[in-house]
Amino acid sequence: MSDNEILNEVRIAVARIEQRQVHILEVITEHKAKVDALEKLSHTMQGRIWLVSTVVFGVLAAAWEIVKHRLLGQP
Image (cartoon, rainbow, N blue to C red; front, side, top):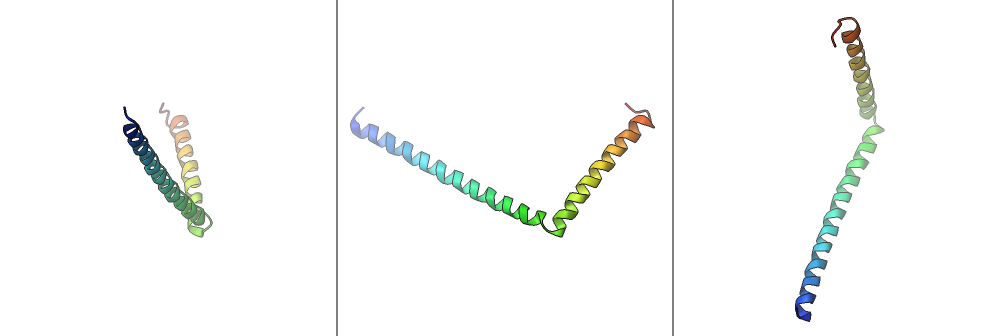
């Protein structure tokens, strides 16, 4: 291989690395925006209602499993 061929391969590799870095930065930026939106939502009344409803549903699901297994005798 000549020096020019090696240099061209290195340039191509560096260009690919730069493209990957740009893509990773875009993904991180999008992720940060989503996390920020979730943090804002969690501090609102809607977020609190969502949290309470999730906890209530979990408790009801667990209670139903207990009723099903103990009272109804289902395995």
